Image (tube, rainbow, N blue to C red; front, side, top):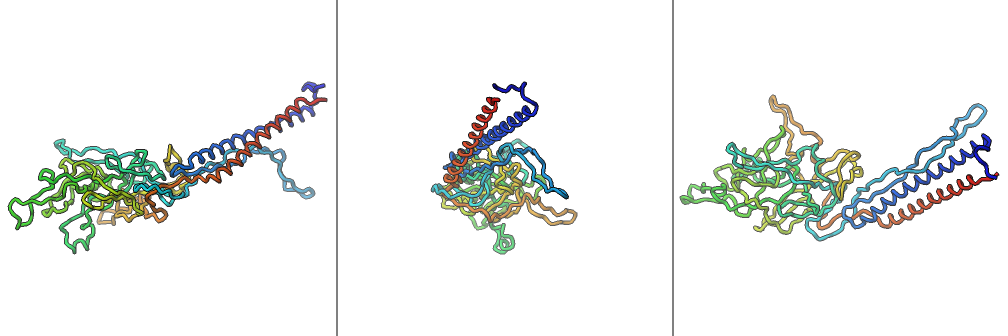
Length: 463
């Protein structure tokens, strides 16, 4: 004869409830184990799926114990009786963490000159092009183009971070990855202090006078220089020969058609100490009488102006490659080696804490700490935005840029060209993890099956 709840005594009823509760606890613990093992299998599946994905960083999932109930508290013992340990029952497991292993992976050669990988834990910075607007004079005539790169650490979250260095040059001359995002770095620009007529003594006292181009520390999308237009009187490229012994009407050309046209540095903005603009002290090569030549007012590769110094077309470079110092170089048609710029490397305080976005991109959000910019080459300014430290002068206080804007020389990273970073997925390890995960899942299903059988026995219990 079957027991009915109405005929059970109070003690038996309580005992049955406790047995039922204990067995359902085991079932729910096993269900939690099933969910956690399924999540780990998803992580393993994603790792294996990306075994040939360049720059992929394998994930690792860890388990953690779930909540506990205490059926009997522990005690330290007294004068006559000894102590006892607490009695606790756990309710399964849950996902502890899903981590990224950002350690560098192996080098996979591709033979492409602009393919490269970072040997350290840094990131390439890619993003959208800089927005430009025309500079107009009082009569509404276009006299230049201005825009803004990244000049402070507060703007470093704008670009995406990536480990995949599959770059190429698009039709507009921008260095892009295969996902149409442009590469950020430090561009070669026209030196506003350059004076081709400076004497050897003047150059020895001030070396910047002898350098036609310098590196701007404004972080910008990298673009090859533009191609110079044919020099004419209208565009300022052909001027009267200043030599007093020259024939009447003789002229000289300040540049040759097809020569690279580098951008000029922007003027002082936001109170930062920057290099002067072209309106101050620019002397074009070969301009003996010191006439100033209009150029754009921006330290990015869009170097166009109304006077047609450039024909607004990017110069064609052959044999482009990325050097171990992060320099992007190529050969122009005149045989000159052109340095486009230098790759900027982003370094997070905690590289494993970056947030994975869509595809091969990351963002330095919560958990990554501060994002800093490093480089593999010496720069003329140690701060973003061409900021410089200025000592106190009279009533003017000393100017010290924020420490977060400092650009450090990176000794932990280097560039390997002609190849990409391989996936960090270890197939052997993933298969071993898959086996243990499958067996763990199977064991949890067994707990559910046994619990179900015991509950069936309890329901069918006879007198």
